[in-house]
Amino acid sequence: MGAEPLYGWLQRAVRERPHEALLITDTETLDALAVQHRLGTLAARCRAAGLIGGRTLAVQSADNRQLAWGALLAMYAGCPFLPLSPAQEAAPLLAAAGGARWFAADAGAAAGPAPWPLDWLDAPADEAPAAAAPLPAAAVQLYVASSGSGGAPRLVKHTGAGLAAAVGASRRRTGLGPGDLWLGCLPLAHIGGLAILLRCLHAGATLRLLERFDAGRVHDELYARPVTHLSLVPAMLARLLEQDDAPPPATLRCVLVGGGPLSAAVAEPALARGWPLCPVYGMTETASHVTFCNARRDGWSEGDVGVALDGCHIDVVDAQGRPVQGEGLIRIRGPMLMAGYAGDAGPGDGLRDGAFVSRDIGRLDADGRLHLAGRADHLIVSGGVNLDPERLEARLAACPGVDAVAVTGIADPEWGQRVAALLSGPVEPDAFLAWCREHIDSAQRPRLVFKTEHLPATALGKPDRPAIARLARRLHPSPGDQGRLRP
Image (cartoon, rainbow, N blue to C red; front, side, top):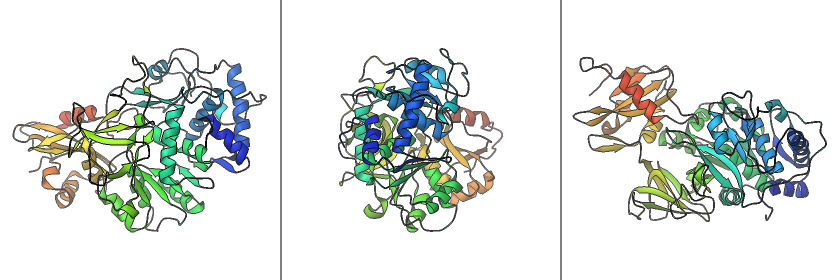
């Protein structure tokens, strides 16, 4: 397991398992030798077109297959990789990454060289293979955009060594190894999807890569192939469970669930049916998850994301960085942390004394298990009660007829703030309020409800909290019109 990250992992697969399936897409199945040859020809084409080792290579696409080939090409050619979704504004991110060469459908507003066509990534090139020239482990090998819930995206920098630490710690807890099959349906423009590709390379496991998440496709693949591992966000898990009431396939050992609060309303029915749920916690700055909970084996309650991975230390601190008992900001130390944000003054920027302090609030129990309590920067304070929008939204999403929901606080002279819910989907506000009265505690219950076709989101697809608040204020009834306000 001492191969130099990241390209060294593919080299090891070529030596040890040259003819075992490495990557399965909708169009082909490739072993390690075939992947290596494809990368050699693609590298030759791109070098002839001006690609320089050490210069960032970006891919802007909604297709996971194209993003995966971009990531693999960057490893082979010795370039840091920058994945981009079509919703992201490319120009500032390309500039922050050092003026990257890139693949995209069109140039848009980006300055610099025109992008190469995405279809280069879809088929073998005719050129004779060029030699690989991978980056050393200490070099920055990945840039990933991270913006949280509102605000301009920042580029997180990860070295090969940091990514190797993250991948190795995850593998030891998830048990991923040669012969396993990970069904990848998370977007590779974000760290959660990219981490799956890296874990499979490191482990010598097979990646069955879907172009995007589709609940029906994921369901069919799970029962058609010997899938052992799966990663989902809570909303994806909810959609998958709606497909039928069948137990999970016998081969499935680990379903990582992260990227947002997992509600009991979603998790408990899944656990009762035998789904091997493993709630986790992490972020772009930590190269994916840094905790792990085996919910069936260890027991689980809402907010529980388990214990820290090997090599990672988690504690809870106040705003000044002092350790506290009870709830506080989550502080993380470990070799998997980012190298900083691109464009900042030094490699440690974004870190405090070698640690990353998130804006998430949590507590550690006597067994060292981390329990999430919300976000420090998006709390709603109503009647003296602190409410976390994400946790409340996870519960409200269980209401029949709700496709998407976001909550925010509306200023109120008596309560400080009243909870307002913005809904999309066929549910009517009165039916939603009736459901809330039955399922949501009075202190957390939305009192103001608005229907909207689309909920504001950031370029990374997260709730745009400032925009949600502005929309709610625009829709708020005047003092003489009570609208959907309810006591």
